[in-house]
Image (cartoon, rainbow, N blue to C red):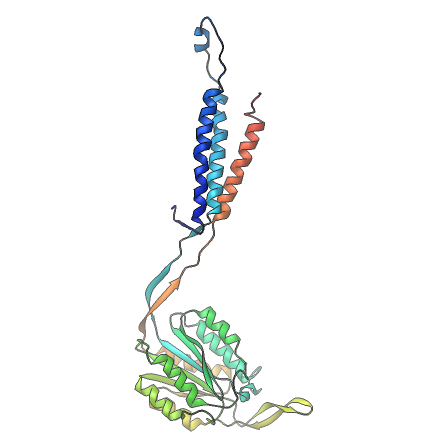
Length: 330
């Protein structure tokens, strides 16, 4: 009705009140004319009726429409909302992010983990047509977000990631296997995993190369990123005097990360700063685009305020007319 949907359509039953109101008004109008006896009414036929005779009915009309608009306001008219399915060009991407304790090293600003989150967030926002998901790993691995086109949800999930959420360690194979599991049933022609880590695989029941073979089997390209400066880096270490920074050697298993990338048709990058990660975006942009079915939900917008405002204005106009211009003298 009128292009709106109504959240509380049951209030329309209140409009039935108008039926007895109108009947009573008509009946009252017929009974309100006084009877007077005259020998002839010829002289009255020559008299013109004033406009106020007809205008007084507008008061009742205004009241009726005021009730109608107020009932519409109670029914809460809303803009039409529905799921719309359309096709969009894009690829499916899973981000596998290392959140082990070593990701708190301060060779990045403010640390490796926050820098990786910032770059990943920028990456997500720059690819609105792609379905992107998120897997985190340290000693274990779990899925933070499945594949989605909802950038806002994914960005909020990314903000909540912290080191220490799960058991410490570096289970690269487990993290990659988890990401592959999320992509294996994808219908997209291009499926990509971007794996960021700063260490050597030392935990997990799945070896990194075993996970890489799984990725290759399902046609998933893996881009691996070794995060960390060259040489030594300041790591936060708990001491009897509190947390202090100690310079320690940066150890990244670049051979394994390179083998994973080569086996799956990807590429290995050594990220010594945030700008280095831009190379990954260029590589992904060169991938073949594939059609992805996207469901878009349009939000409901409330419009009851305008109906309530019109109803209130009509009531005010009706009251002003009744006690001023169209006032009746008993």
